[in-house]
Length: 152
Image 1: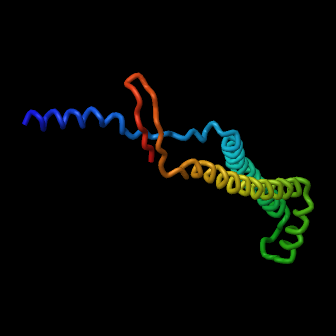
Image 2: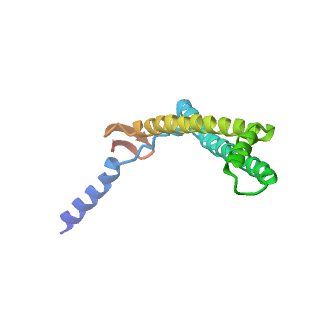
């Protein structure tokens, strides 16, 4: 019995030398990864800003058109007069400003979506490529002596 217990403790003392230690890859320090994440966050911010510009431009167009037509449409039944007023309202400076805002917002939103998708995918690829190593086997010298490291 004494031999079994001493063999068990001897085996237990050897376990730390074969202990597994997970090596954490620090992809956050990669300059390429940081650049991709910065551009992805810029894209998300652009989606919000340009999306709001797009909506504001559309709201300006509709509001200016409706107020122009409502002020001038007399009887409310003549559709030819309504169409004439509708086309006249498109010549107002405020309506044109709304159209420009909508166009800039639409184009900016598209570019921002492209940035977010492209650099988000690139950052994800960089982050996932850090885990390609399946296992490593190495030696380490420490205060307790030499140890063998097997990392998965």
